[in-house]
Image (tube, rainbow, N blue to C red; front, side, top):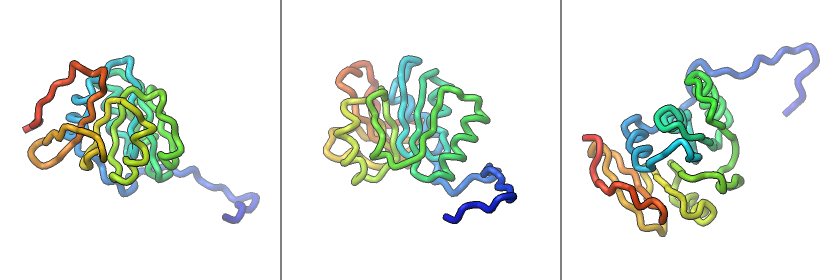
Length: 172
């Protein structure tokens, strides 16, 4: 990129209209968060956080801390705006390739990623509570949860999460 000539004002990017985002339906967000059994002690990581709606719901409903990782800078900027509008100071949105981040502080993970990328990430994520929207976690024994009869989420139970409910149909 060429440098900006002196004397030219560049307006900071603020999105009044959202960038094109394949947003997770709210009914799915609610089901995913229910399956994680979050508490205020949890740190939720949302991989491919989009507009931040999972993070905002988690912080507002469960009081946890949350971190979103988004590949597209314009989508991450929009998510930051949504977090700011929602007044959720316990959320951090980071921009970049999800493969470059560490997940050691996460106690729970949500994701909407393709199986090839999940295959690469799962060994680094470890034995956390994980819920994936739309795609099964490759090589892991997951429980499929049908949401409202038309959406699927896949739940990987942590070895320490013995209190989890094991329903198979939610939000009718």
